[in-house]
Length: 238
Image 1 (cartoon, rainbow, N blue to C red):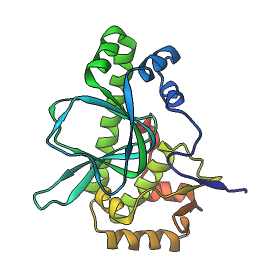
Image 2 (image 1 turned 90 degrees about the horizontal axis):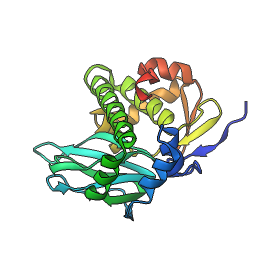
Image 3 (image 1 turned 30 degrees about the vertical axis):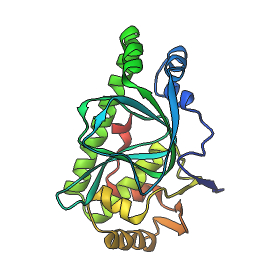
Image 4 (image 1 turned 135 degrees about the vertical axis):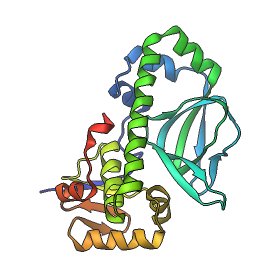
């Protein structure tokens, strides 16, 4: 079996337009949306792209990289509550948003005004239905994350996150390696544990022969068993 080169979140060669069309948006409507007035912004990792508690009168679309929504507890510790991969977006929020946004890796984000976005949606019911479908998908992902942090053990939590990441990046785990986009602390912030424990989990997954690490590259040496360990059923990602 030939293992092809490792994939990062932004090196698939697929455009944002392609992603929107793959997700079910008509090509003309995808062009209409991408031709909306917008600016391209760089989001750097390890710093907030948008702080919580401020108005979010804008629409964002990830062109490359990986964005995360986060919330903090009273002591300032962050919990990553949602991810956005290339082609996925963050819709406008009425009033002040109770979440912040940060980049997991260096990312490019298309940012437009909520008023321009609303005008397109109001004039094109198909666009409204498309984004409603995407909202439902994000809700399904959120429910799965809740089960992951609330009921699965530490090993299953990490295995499930890896399986979801592979699937959302459209990687074939039987023939492709993945460049792990997350630091151990970020995985801890997603799965509700410590970075020390995440390190132990990765070592254990490797000892079990489920993954092989080479720096940040991950090879999935027993994909079906990794799925079983993580309890991963990809139906919620459709």
